[in-house]
Image (cartoon, rainbow, N blue to C red; front, side, top):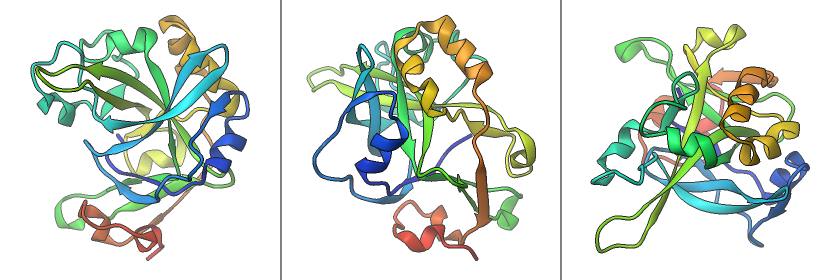
Length: 222
């Protein structure tokens, strides 16, 4: 799964990494976030058609259009690639509302109870990771519409499986456009064919477990 991640990239890195897309990005770089948690707003890339995409902020945790309230978002931060196309909360987005979620890295907590040790997982050589995402627009009563997203996950592969049995679906640059513009069947094919990026990881301090903590010290090795 992916329950915490970091985003401390400048837009230049996103532009260079996602060179297959015609990107519309804000002039000012995003504020660094070293401890992104569920229900918080974060940046995603949404397709505009014809190989174009723009950056917009959405809340983490999909709220489907039919939801009565926002509570469901705590259970929809991740969408399992094996069932996203059929589960009620995700199937409409899987067909036509897919996005990319830029990240500098993410955290996992192997172990049990007080013995859990957080690890920071990040690209070994690339500037960023690009998670496959789904998004929705929810219109609550007497309030403005809310746009939300979920990160697609898959079975962990290789040595990474020792840290956790799940991992985000991470897409290389040549699949970015196809992911956000293709249909549901194409999305399934992309998910099955996406190669595992070159990753590195190290243990970090337990302060990352508190969502109020921020700062580059959270990703430093211990």
